[in-house]
Length: 425
Image (cartoon, rainbow, N blue to C red; front, side, top):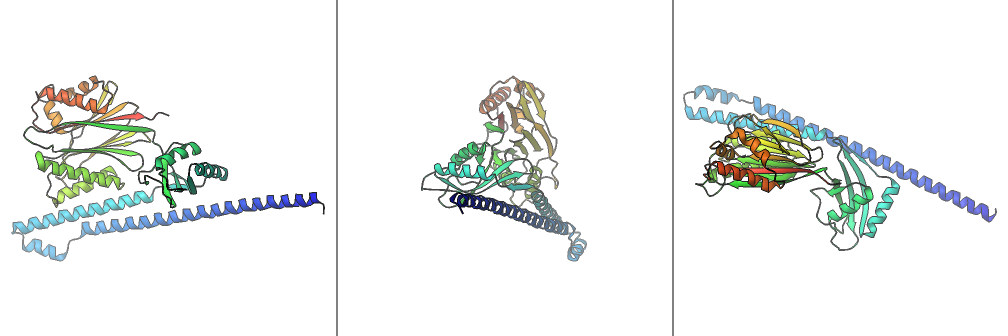
């Protein structure tokens, strides 16, 4: 055989080997994708089984009443203390059953979430590995994740070549350029990359961002405010703004409102819905285990991907949505937390636009305004202020209200203003 034919045969073998390698790689990816799908289905089934168990346990607590309790309720009917004790025990059992039901709902919701995992093209992956290596970063497995709500994420194994400080933010910037998508590290990511292989999660940057400012005045006879508030991220691309007004004033009111805000934050960060979190906090107050007073709760949850704002209010003062010179009032008429077994929360959802402001107030602001022009005039008053900075707008509102009550602060006042803007592309 001639040298030319020999070379031709070698080239043919090389191409065939390359084709076989590609086929094997694709088959491996297909097997991996099938295994991932099976694991997801298995985990989803397990979560649904847990949810069913919690639901059945809740039903058992709700329907449970022993013969001994029935006899005691008859034989001790005239003993007031025992009857009250039995009633409290029954209420606590109902609250516990409600908490189990919320656990069941949450597990069912998690099990119902759809996510698909895919690998990017071989060519794109090789380019990414090469470019990241030049920056001192090695890339392992990389998966593209698309959630059922449309949010996009990347799960990537990374490690640094040398003991240098490369932040997850820096890595996100490089990946954004290479993948042609603005990515940010997930909130649970480590701040710096490690020299050991670790999996990092990067998510698509939300379309919007917010900034919250506050202004407050303490009741003139007290040293601390009974109002409490917090602003924090929760879930995927959501921000919650909480405001709680503890009943009464001073330390006791602060203790109650601080507990409500802290519990709400913990439940929301654990991915409970706002309504579920409110029911659970109400159960804690209702049982009286912590010795707390009643409190209001005003919750505003903003989706930074969709641009929606979900208001949920229990016993809270009106909230306001400011768009240029137009102001919408969002009110509720219900009792504070800790008074009845099923809290009557009122919810409303609004779509936000670039430059909108969400304003939350405590009862003391409304009461002080009623000493002057009255609550009904507040939307028109807010529409006059042109401050763009949330803190300045909050101070403008509080300053006007203090003028109406001539500086006499009869109750704690808190004004929270959250500005909403579209990110510059």
